[in-house]
Image: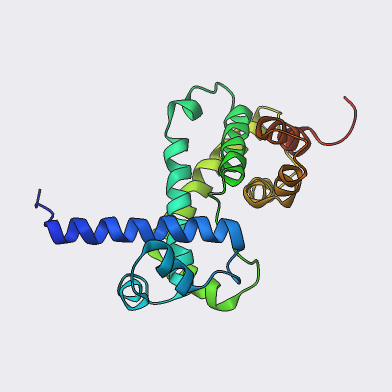
Length: 202
């Protein structure tokens, strides 16, 4: 295996610091409010240096999304995921993980409609690979849960998938956190219950 030069290692450290900063700023402020100047100042580098790594704000956001999806894949490969005997419990586990990431201020907040950002995401190989792999792995669990009678089989699997993806940026989670009336665990368990069990009395 070829050795990585010291310069390459330092460039990777800087790139990681940039993506960490972008991830936090996107979670705090959202895509529209975040500026490249803020990212450069937060990392402690010149804006020109930042642009050598990421030529646009959209590519910064794409890198942050790829990173969080890679973290999701790492969770799916973890013991916490694999030890769940039922598909439904695996789906609950990854949904719980996503909400915990959001509550920790580590989930990028991106606008649903932004053509420039969408184009950047669709050209970002690491993002596309990660979202495809996460979708495939969750899709398999959804179909299995439907076969086991734990998720309504008449629902198209992609509808279930998008519903679970939406929990990662669910405004209810942030709203409950902002009230200060609930701790993070109660927020997660409450939103999980409404997502998987609905609102009806059982």
